Image 1: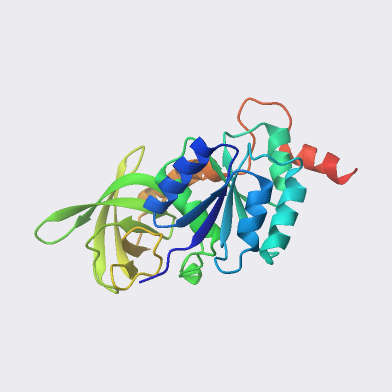
Image 2: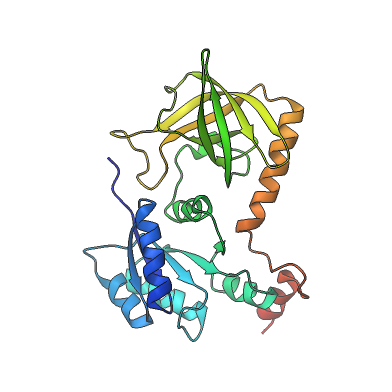
Length: 262
């Protein structure tokens, strides 16, 4: 069985930090909470329990985000340590602060477990079967039905792209088999056929922090189904995009250009 990955949760209060560590443990991660920069430094300096990613709340008590990220990476002895920013989607200046710190992954609250789990697995280097995915992949949370010859069993779509999906189910089909799926997308349902390219099942887990289920590559996707899926992917991508809150003035590119000219 895959080992639980270590995540450092860096937040400003015990209430939010404890709630998040509990949530992450329920999703299959091993999480430790730090309320101060000093506590985060101590945890990251402990080589017995190496942290594999940091979920940093946007209200974390740091004077300057870029400097804090550099220092924490140095304490961990890992310049490639990935950070995921968490909190309400800020305006353009807040987005620029995150981008300037070198943080590329975000989770805007409120968020589903699928989004949170997906982004942390990305930070942990979830490259499993990356060569199988040429299209943009995003977390979604919608129902699916796995249609068999005699009956259909329920599932949920965990991730989706124009090329395939990961279907959460305790009873995935065997690797290499063909499956018929009904995907209950926001605008309308689509029926797609696919081939199972991998499974995540007890006793043979690829990722302990991923749901049980199967990765499916679509086969002979119709144009109508492809358009519906691409539209769904485009909308879902907004939940994890490094863009400012809608309705605020000022663009991220203009602010970053101003910062680079200093």
